[in-house]
Length: 463
Image (cartoon, rainbow, N blue to C red; front, side):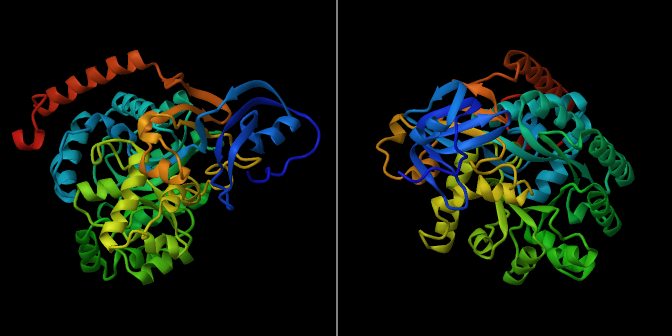
């Protein structure tokens, strides 16, 4: 047993006490309480520590037994495109440029609407909550609908309005995209769980003027800036050809690099560029499965982490993964670095779990609020069942969580002190209605794109 986290003396009232389980705090000391407790008052953590010690200090209105479970901070999906659950399996086994230009962009032009975005996001929220994800960072269109779905689901999210110098489903021009982004920010800033953001799609879809304008808008309102960066070799070659610099140096020249920026992928990067990202305090969202599936390459995550870059873990969208499963993402992130470097210690289980929790929060600029179980932080936590056959025997809890755990092991999810999933039933999402709407939208996609369900769309025809 380890010492209890600091609390004040005297019995204090709490709304909820979770006790008796193994508490994995993911704090800066990586403290673990073998038989621990977490007390919650309102939306924040009131006490964390050994169960006996916390019980002496707390009088709770409701007590939940966590015996046989691990109590863990809610997982943080640092990069995704939530509405793209409705494109799951639409176009697979392609490289990024062909996938985007020949399939995704044309499909989005024909079928993406407010309704598509809302219900696709709600489906993503259901999937993520059932897998222990309490926070995600999103980039898509009609992002106000993403925010609305997140609010309904009771999750936490950074919602970034996508901006490009191409006609998009919600904005014919980048100027209109910037105006949409500003409206989103004004409507949602100050919300307890939804953080609005500005999201230029990528260097190859945004002019220098647009990239600088997005940074200025993010600075004006003090919100995050989300961007795909250095994802493929082709992006690096094209940026050097068009702008005379590699992507990271080019963005730095434009004044876009900075602590507001969360850069997704960052696969093709040098040590000097990693040092620059660290100096500019840029957050990185690593997406190993999507990078593998699109053949984009292997990001040097071990070097990033050890260079002091804040690296979170993302699933990317369900159209390029094809699941929103951060447990598998942790495992793959660790295994990929090991096999790529020929070193079994290249990325450890502890480092992978930090990327899905505390480091992910730091990458998104939310470390003061989430990512670890500490007094004063938001009460975002999950209870993971550790009694299934694939979970026993238990010797090392961190290794078990990363290498053996599955999304189905998550039994309870709490966001901001509110129980949003109990006994694997998500209480905030109308699942029957959601399934009806998803089927309606699936039929609509098939009709508009001329697809026959059950066949590989990109082999059947190109739309």
